[in-house]
Length: 283
Image (cartoon, rainbow, N blue to C red):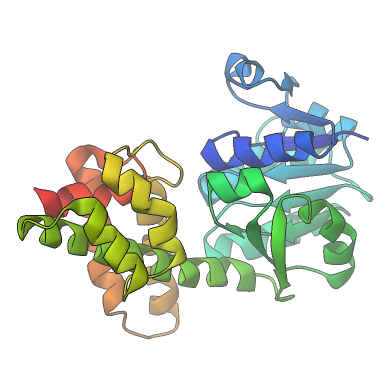
């Protein structure tokens, strides 16, 4: 049976194409049908029709508001969910909202797997994402063979909301590393050091990381076409602050990092790759 997919942004399209390359039939729903068809997908008329034709539907949406809308809109997923139907949600959700998504889907008899992914377009296309899941173990084990088609590392934290929280914590590392690497790059250039040589040295020294490996060429070329956007990491760091507030805990490095990405977004870099924060420091 075909797999359904909703959310053909940069990451979603890469995952959907990866599934297709792994001999899965993927059909989609998209608000703008022509955009989905331009990417080579068959687009159904509504989320309801999509779920009626598939036992499993992936969601890869920008935020929890988008997930809520797709679930509850007229002819949304909840109007077709029933026993035997599964929603795998790859979106980075707010940790409170995602608990409700578990509840409303399961109340209809369906299965919901919370499954944000770590990594972006390039690892998605190679099947090298990391998936962090939360939900009933039986649902996780059923879905795992499908996840293995695009994720080389998979974790299961079981309790609803834990995967969303872990994704936000991970993105604190991601954002902090990127901001520091960008500032180091701009500072080194101000000293007159060749940018490529500078990044090579950082890559062999204190800057050695998956983040630098992934973004070195973007920094060299100043090509900030989005793999993971500034708007997306800004949203995630806002959610992280909500998480800290709910725990009555302060955030230190996260606060500075969030404000830097907010400034980058305000400066017009919201739709660019989050490595575009380099432009703040260069200026």
